[in-house]
Length: 95
Image (tube, rainbow, N blue to C red):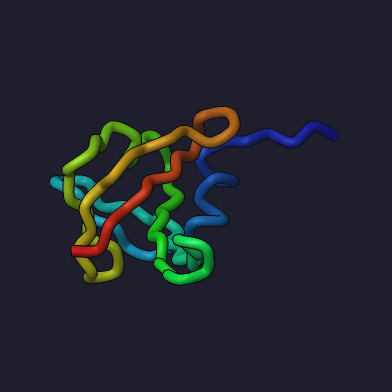
């Protein structure tokens, strides 16, 4: 049986694990990840902020735009499409 990806199957993941995200007039769900990154030969640990969301919701954002995730303000650093382009990953910096 073939797997069909549509708006319903895309939203299942976001509805279960997503946080409310707002940018301009768009409100949608996104998954915020906060992995640590080791820099300068193990001398510095930095937290990265990455948001996975549907490209149709936030894929048009560009560097410098703002987005609020679960009440916390972030600035967009860059946006990259994932796999087939249905989802995108936004690199963020915390305001």
